[in-house]
Each structure stands twice: as structure tokens, then as C-alpha cells.
Length: 196
Image (cartoon, rainbow, N blue to C red; front, side, top):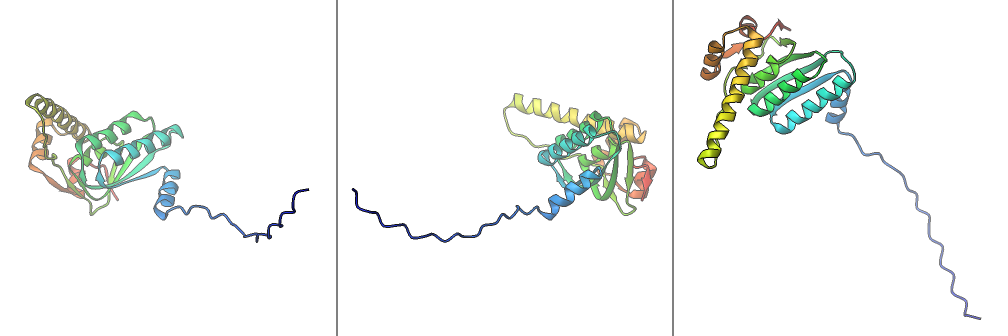
């Protein structure tokens, strides 16, 4: 018979609990706004934000045809990102309303121009301008990039032209010179339809 092994001393039973991962206030707010069919677009409009906004638009469009409202304030934006959001607005079936606040500058104007309804707070500032273009590469690569940039500028001009009823030449001049519009000026220009 093998020798008896000493009994293991009893181990204490430690209480345990589950703490749910806290959801950030910003995330909770964004989710609640999304449930109300509202999307916030603020700060720099780059590829990451454009992809996020496009995904939200597609999600809301799948949920029904009620209008979606985008609150837009962007002092800095990438041309391809702004045109990507404008294309997503054009793609979905639900009407998109944009409410501009703060300052909307440069390519972000495309997002505003693509909307069915365009409103602005009375102290909003609009800056029609084209982004600077810089690139590196071989001569052929630079030529291709410059041609792509020109196509994107033409798309921006066309969106503003369609929204405002202004001539392409007038819009091109305003984009090139960096025309600044108050909210009232933007309404007269045709960029927005209503002041809040």
C-alpha cells in the first residue's frame, strides 16, 4: 500500500465579478445620434473619417428611407475624401440633409453641395478653395497624379455648380481665389438653402 499523501490544504474561494467594458462617452453619444439618423463630421476630413461616414450612410440607408442629417464643420479636408463622402451621399436612396456649422473650408464644400437640403447656422463661414497639390514620383507618375487631381477638381466644381446654379467659370474663379462667404452670402450664392 502506498504511503498516504498529505491532504492539500484547502484553498480559499475568492469572489470574482464581471465588470463590463466601459463605453466611452463619445462612442455612446455617436451611437445615440446614429439611432436618430444624425452623423457628425468635424475636424479634418481624411480617408479614415470619409470611410467611417460612408459606412454610417450605407447603414442608415439600409435601415429605411427617412432623411439622414449630417452636421458638418471642417476647416481642413482632403479632396478625395470629401468627394468620397459626396459619392456616398449620391449613392444612397435616403435623402441627406447637411447642417453646416463653424467653418466649412475647401473640399468639404463637396459634402455640402451633394446634399438634398443644405442649411447653416447664421454664424457659419464658408471658404471656397482648392487644396494644394503636391506629389513625388517619376515624370509619368506625376503626370498621372496631376491628371487625377484635375478630374477631382472638376468634380468639386461640378458639385458646386449643380447646387448653386452658378456657371462653371464663376465657380472655378471662386475656388481658385479662395472666396469667403458668410452664411447669408452663402444663401445668396445658392450654396445653402436655409439659415438656422
